[in-house]
Image 1 (tube, rainbow, N blue to C red):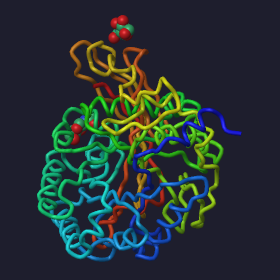
Image 2 (tube, rainbow, N blue to C red; image 1 turned 30 degrees about the vertical axis):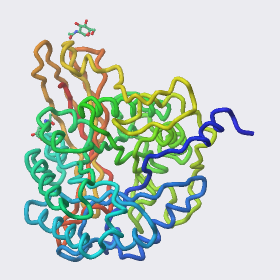
Image 3 (tube, rainbow, N blue to C red; image 1 turned 90 degrees about the vertical axis):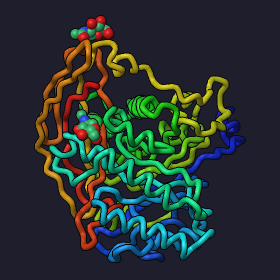
Length: 445
Ligand SMILES: *[C@@H]1O[C@H](CO)[C@@H](O)[C@H](O)[C@H]1NC(C)=O
Ligand SMILES: *[C@@H]1O[C@H](CO)[C@@H](O)[C@H](O)[C@H]1NC(C)=O
């Protein structure tokens, strides 16, 4: 028997985009081929309990093992009618980025409108600003990029698609909340048509982060990113809860909790019409990493490890999470307005209240064979007019700290995607291996 909410939810036509993140290589280092992408895309489309998870977010335009050939995910997407959030890897320097642009141009020429009609958007870079920050550098992550560089690459990308079938495609960038909220990165926000946010409450171990807190932690991250974006659309480019792995803070990695996260966070986002690329359908394979975020386990199968249906989920409390200018189609409750208003922490974060200080944990997920050593200790102090926030965090995965004001709520976790250096230096995508390095820092904006 359906509840009222479920009937209304079924009556709702979500107009937003849903999909998963797809790396470009296997954990063996081998590049995925067209048939590999086709298998993944077809699995996503036929996942039991779902419909419409038909977009693929990519990290690079370049096919593994080549200098600048278009990634084989493109013909696979055409064949399976999968839409694409393209990614151009932006932390490899100008020569590397030039190859991303070459691959983009080649894809436009080679596949024409069959390709262009499938493109949801283009992301220039992934967590480059986070990796460029003291946290990222201290955590031993691979290189990132300066905001001016990302802004320049965004312009170059827009120039590249002008006058082609991709003209008008929204171009943005993906980064962590902390990077979006860092005013020094404003040039990137200015250059973007949309902001991509990665968020994982699982890693926020310096505050209560049991699974029951996940929804509020996620919404806080989203609200602050929306605030930083000044009205630009915020797309959720990565989020998820692991099905297995170690407990981080109070967050237990289990299929039960992954299901709870899906019902509490993902279903309301879908209902509110927010563009979302979940992390993830399947972890980099064949060596399953720990923690593992894949909802299908080791083998590609349309039977997920937990129930993905949203039918009986009350999505009425999702209004504050509706992102940016995304259209809102939810109808499950009179109170759901989808106005995209930010959460309540703005006073302390706006530096007007003199209450900085607090603890943030940032997590690194490395790709391919990259490993990161978690042994960080850092102190950042705030230059706010009316208060200074200092604190200490110690590494090895856990940290603690305190600010001058106990009322401050620490910012959400930052996540980083670290590319392994491969033959081409462009091993973007292909998450695998080690989730490592919990980095602790004090954030005081
Ligand atoms: C803020 O962003 C700038 C530019 O990306 C970076 O250099 C700086 O380290 C960032 N600050 C923090 C605290 O992350
Ligand atoms: C801490 O926050 C409270 C409430 O916002 C404020 O009244 C107080 O002045 C703050 N204390 C410090 C040391 O910033």
